[in-house]
Amino acid sequence: MSKLIKIITAVAIFGSTMFVAFLANAQDAIKRNDEGRMFYSTIEVPANADQLFVSGKGPRPVNPDAPRTERSYGTTEQQARSTFTSIKAAVDGAGWNMSDIVMVRVYLVADPATGKMDFSGFNKAFLEFFGTEDQPNKPVRAVVEVSGLAVDGWLIEIDVRGARIPVNN
Image (spheres, rainbow, N blue to C red):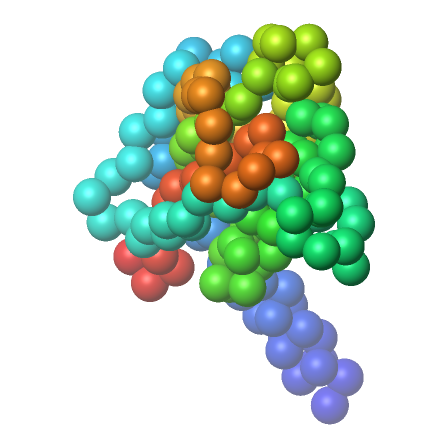
């Protein structure tokens, strides 16, 4: 009986190791090129990849109980963190991971206090979600300044695209 348990254990370990190796090879089919500190220059997604598109999201108010006309959303950094947290919730809710995100498109409004977009504040929050020890993948991205967004007080709106190779391919 002991020999049978050893065989079953060995088969289980081998099978799980092969599955993990298969998943790693499947994700390698998505090629990330020209790595920069915060993002890649290009990412190649094969035709057989599943794709996820997350609609533009903005920050949650820092004072959600205030009347709509009195809500505030914080600094660009705070708004970026809040927005990426919402995106993470949407991605997780769809059964995906932030490591599957291959493209980030960001719209920034100039901070009313300075008259300039706070690119540095945005980057601080961005680096909490991409290129970390826990989540080392980085997307390609575009960051543009716009004159305004759909909600008064928003300084940021972000949409993302995810891609992953299906396990059964």
